[in-house]
Length: 378
Ligand code: CUA
Image (cartoon, rainbow, N blue to C red; front, side, top):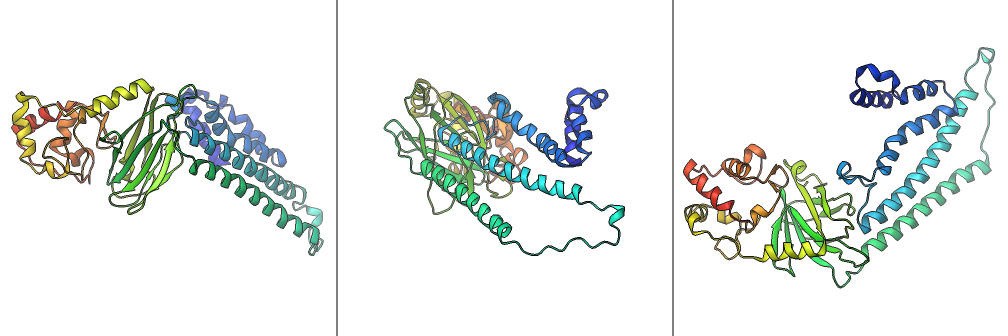
């Protein structure tokens, strides 16, 4: 209770400045809450549920990019509904149990006139014992049935005719993204069409791992599903609004687990077709950048990276065919600009310590030429 209060005050202090602390709306609530009894439990609940309700009520995507209470995709909606039901049932249990507890503490508190008196000794009651066995079983049963139905509805969904197929392979610490039907390979940014005006275009994603267990989680689009070595898991998303949805690896997978970020970019169907057409283009081959190209192909870069239609066929690292069409480098660690690309190639360990891409010890001349070539891969 006190911790909650402290953090509430801290927030309002940050928002309104030091002088206004006492005007914080939660402060009078806290004073009332300290008077005890049933009211205190209700007040505590109100304070606790305040932020959750505020989050849920806020539909502004820009401020809630990873908020499960603002679902924008069919499976995420189903999960949101079930989570509301579970929260509601648990809140009711909390109010009842907490209320009875608070009432008992207050009503049967120690009083001076009871000094040296033994309280009444009450032994088993079949009715009460039956009630507190049967009611929880019924509650658990309702939760199991409702959850099972949601899981079944999400997992057994069949792809409609216009759905997109993708495969995501988890690597330490980036996402390989393949579109088997479209012949596209990219990384860290999953581009998908949106479902608009009843025309369904979900994306069905096969999840695999090249090394350890990872977990796909884009909270506004779907539940959390692991990527497990030697196993294929399935997830599907169906965003209903164009935009960028952020997610991250949700299973500890090594040093840079926290910086294994994923973006899902949802396009209108026309824009998605444009993106597909651009990705299908062969890589740019500008004769003026030959020196950089030769530098790239003469180092061991080609052992890990692929550029479509060239001898670079490595699969340990991201495909570079359309490198500059992506928004970030290092799986969301830095923005993808020419300067950042240069810094990244010079020493990947600087931006992402532990990244499996080594410092190639290039001379400044080689580095400049190579980055000039790489940054032409739009
Ligand atoms: Cu990949 Cu955590």
